[in-house]
Amino acid sequence: MHPKEKLAEPKVDTLPSGQKIADLVWGFAPTQAAAAAVELDLFSLIAQGMSGASELAKASGTQARGLTMLLDALVGMGLLDKQKGRYALTPEAEAYLVKGKDSYMGWFFQHSSDMMQGWGRLPEILRAGKPVRPVDGQGASEEFFPPLVRALHVSHLPAARNLARKLGVGARWRGLKILDVAAGSGVWSIAALEEDPSATATALDWPRVLDVAREFAAKHGVDDRFSTLEGSWRETPLEENTYDLALLGHICHAEGEEASREFLRRLCPALRPGGKAVVLDMVPNDERTAPAFPLLFALNMLVHTERGGTYTLEEYGRWFSEAGFKKVEAVDIRSHSPAIVASK
Image (cartoon, rainbow, N blue to C red; front, side, top):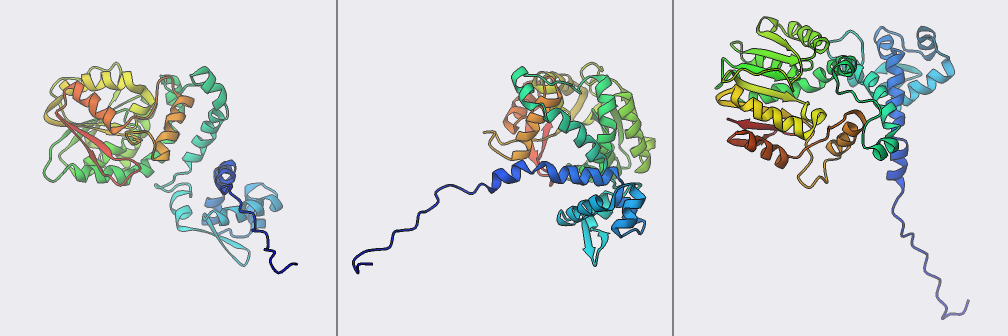
């Protein structure tokens, strides 16, 4: 090489990393692996003392080769530990994936399988602008929601207790008459009843869903102050000047803007002076650029409902104002989104 010649500069790769795309492609795999483990009841078998792949395969009716692969994947996902070829539950699996525990959340995976069937047809749904199989009528709702609300009860309970305390329930605010709208498991009103022994609650929902709510009210020891009202929030009459607190837990996203605004207009006269209405939901920022979960959940509503979506704090504030509420604020309840609290 001539002394004055320079080595060629190495080419710089100007492409960004493709890892994010690869991670998205494989995003389905952990969910499917965990769902298979739940369906085979592996976590419960391990909780019973089984720890080897061969005995777990025999007990679950599977082949040892494939089951070992699944068990190892669960280790990599942080749901199992592995020492010298023996498997054990991590604290999260012990708490939430062993059947029979009050904290069991395995119902989510049954729900996720149903959801993925719809999401698999997303291009078709986007072209049509409507779901292939909506779940927002009474019949579909009573089939779809009872297993789901069992898991949601466990995941929402800490936020529900935070909400009750932030509102001063049982401290500066006592003797409440509560309306739990589209109550599901009743988690939001049950948490308030636990804080205020002088409060009562009425849960409004479809009959089969209310069966689950009554079960949870009994488990929490508040069933003597927990009544139910069967029907649709769209049609059930609301007695005026009756309630101190109305809880709308994860219902507006399924019903859509028109129905939500109409209900808030009917709800305001049903509250006593100084009463509050609270919306719990997935809330994106006002520009709809983040967080990712509320934005993805809007697509989930496209997949599963006729009119649903997710709505911003600004939108809820406007709806409450036009319904006659005087003050709207966002309250941090240590959840994915703040509670939206409106005062009459």
